[in-house]
Image (cartoon, rainbow, N blue to C red):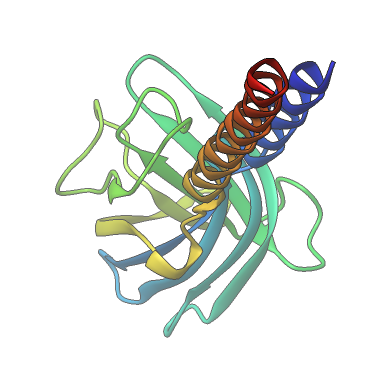
Length: 187
């Protein structure tokens, strides 16, 4: 019965450590008509969902994007659309980021699709008004190393040590019992 309890506890610890793997991606890049992109996107690597956005486009636009609108993936790229704080969804200015991957599950950074490195003719861009598009000419997403979760290896190490201690304790108890039994037979 104790073994079943320990096994259940081990499964619970491993399952809880694998629930969410949030990472922070640092984004940077430049636009073809001026202005630079900077800031972060928080991404759940298990589900591939964006959970938070904090991006800035400096002069001449001076926008701060903090509202996540939409995301999706096709066979050749994934997109993430964000807008200004307080703006209605899909209202302008809208920033659309295109990633050159077919899924954001397990994404660990890379090039953003831009005017000089398009993903199947798509490029990340800024749409300050309905007819005007400003394209990102180069951009990159890198993982912020301080945001990488590491609970699973520590949980596995703790479970291994606990298992070794349990086996050692059980052997000690068993050997003591047998030594008492042998002593009773020899007396």
